[in-house]
Length: 60
Image 1: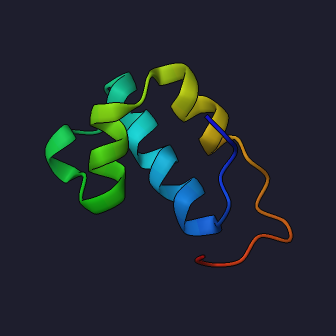
Image 2 (image 1 turned 90 degrees about the horizontal axis):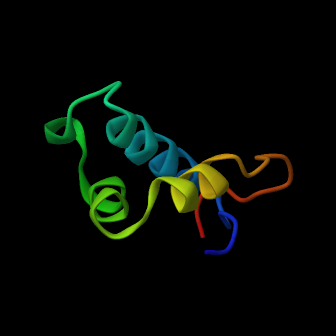
Image 3 (image 1 turned 120 degrees about the horizontal axis):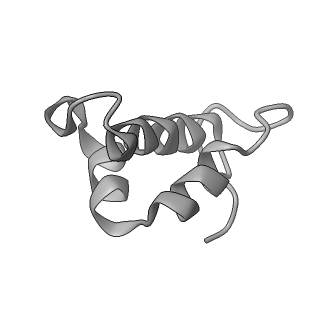
């Protein structure tokens, strides 16, 4: 999976990753983070959430 292309995408991946780890409930996820939770592995989410935010647009 490629790295996040925007700050919003990176934040959604971070929310999905925290739900995968059990740090927050799955029911708190909405939209993109919910679909990421269901379709991506923990390793893919970790890679996307770890993308640097510098010089990224707020949303694509």
